Image (cartoon, rainbow, N blue to C red; front, side):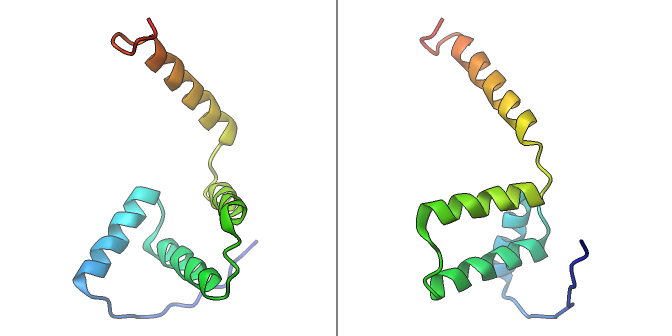
Amino acid sequence: MATTTIKSTYSLDVETVRILEALASRWNVSKSEVLRRAIRTASAEETGGAGGPLAALRQLQADVMEDGVDIERWVRDVRAERRAWAMAPGTGAE
């Protein structure tokens, strides 16, 4: 499904741009996506539509699906990491 986009130009201070770039890198998304998420979050908070923890979970799940994350692979990887950590010397599990 195609999404209509509108190009816009905004002026941001240096610190805001650094934060924007850091979030984009950390979340592995574009700067535009960081701005979209921030605007949606701010709008939901303003209108009281944040919905609490359940809404946050649903938004996280939607974002993960939108980013194309393979959930089954992620679960396998996390389980393998936990097993490896539990068996590592010095963890008290050996």
